[in-house]
Length: 345
Image (cartoon, rainbow, N blue to C red; front, side, top):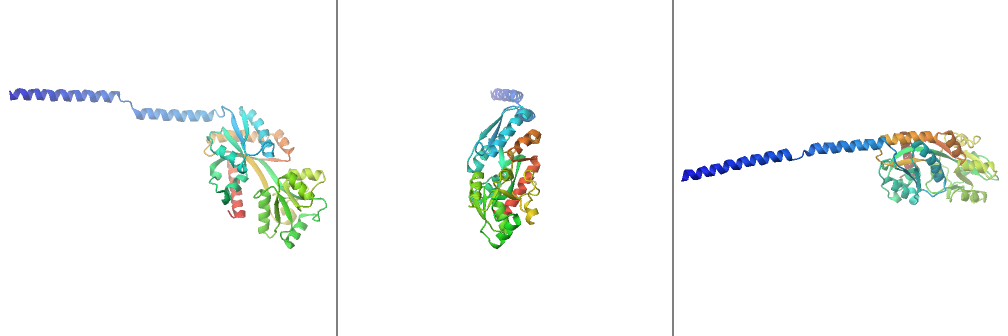
């Protein structure tokens, strides 16, 4: 009887082991290979991204202008947008997003996908804005992808026709003997006009900056005798000089301007090397693919250097100065370094 029970138990164990083997084999053969699927998915994603970049652009591009419609930044952007549409074969949608000295528009751009379908007009006040400790900004040049420089707007100093100062040397000699008495109109605090005055003060030429509302204010103030010198874009000075309203004293750049060829540079006229200019370009969010950057660079270069575009910008009193992405990035870093040294930020 005992032997019979042993046989039954042994038989049950054998059957159980066989069933376990069958189930195990079944599970092994039907469980999907996740690593193979994951590899296929990753390869597919990479291929799709590469295809998207190589097809760029395949939909409209948004161009943010962080300033009001009708200003020089807006007009220049719209001019180039029309030509870019022809070059890229896609619609360029220009959108004015203003506020916070440009940062409302720039933040909108920086928060967009870095795929080249949202870019923005980019200006030097971006740098002074984030450097200023009062603004407590966390953004910097690493927060964007500099694409190209477009406009180069040199500063010129001018006085009214009956000014006692007939040249720059006479003005600076008076400033040396009478610090703080000469008033110079600027377009605003920490603009290129104001920063030039800060640099001059460090060299012993102290003048009082008067921040105006722009060209119209500066003209009325200098002609009315409320300020002694107007610091303006060279194209604006040329126009007023042609009309006999202003007399240019110097151009604040390394070389003479095509708009005022008979006006010396600041260094030529005084021996003091001071430069002030507005440089406007374009930037996108950080992390843009190199292939997209290269395509935009090629299109911008062709459009910016097109003789017709050069002439239409010249009609606004503006010069074009193309810089590719790397050159533009290096230029912006040099400007940042200069501003830090001058402003102590």
